[in-house]
Length: 90
Image 1 (cartoon, rainbow, N blue to C red):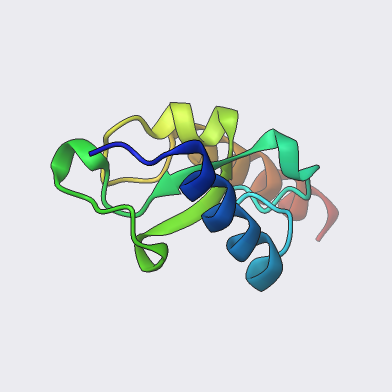
Image 2: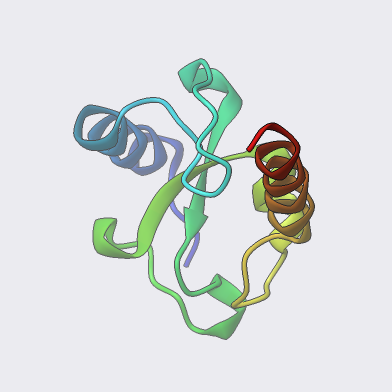
């Protein structure tokens, strides 16, 4: 059963209070309105709407992950970019 707008807002407010306004995947700090609720276990695979199974994610990370159990593909490319920058400056 889908969450109501009121339930979504309450869960998002709680996550913002507990973890701050940043994407769980890429760690970018963003305005709250740019963050979405992302399910630890995707809904299509039986994930629940309970607060323990939710975190905040930016739209590119959330949509890039889709219903996969893996991190979004963009995280791998972000990590390889930052790794190459660290190696150049080391």
